[in-house]
Image (cartoon, rainbow, N blue to C red; front, side, top):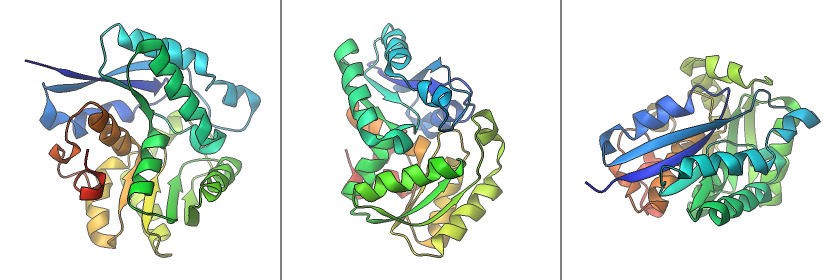
Length: 245
């Protein structure tokens, strides 16, 4: 059997993206499997020490370790570029590909592609982050012509604590954001339990919802030549013809 191997670079304190990625991809097993390599991330803030966690060197080293197992695609499954600047992920992915020879993407680049392909200019934003992180994210999207018309955030520096918020808390945040009628809503953080609430909330609210773990799966499958539409029950991201491989 020919296998497709997808590598995920994972923050060390994250406990959500691995099980949710496996759940999203369960119907593709054993043809397609995800594999994970961690590097140190313990706090999300604007402190120099926190920003330094996302220096490219440890991520590129982690990508090299993943590629010992001959990955078909490698993703940085995290959202740091949303506050540090989108160019950071473009540079990182280029460096990963140069070091490994493998196509690379990230959660933020995947989200931005989905927003571009569906014509979103009015976005709703749900995160666990601190005030200044949230402000930086809103500014970065504004610079790309995307207005954050409504937002909710938990003002938490995490990172482990992000995984402890329950689905009801996140669903209520999404509902609050939906009141301002954005064209789409993103649950932006790969350590939030967002993926599992997307489908029901889309039906309730009539607004596309792009969860960070889900968009990473969507884009890595497309890069690996696997039709994302094979994933069902996890929201319209995977079924929207505008987002086909």
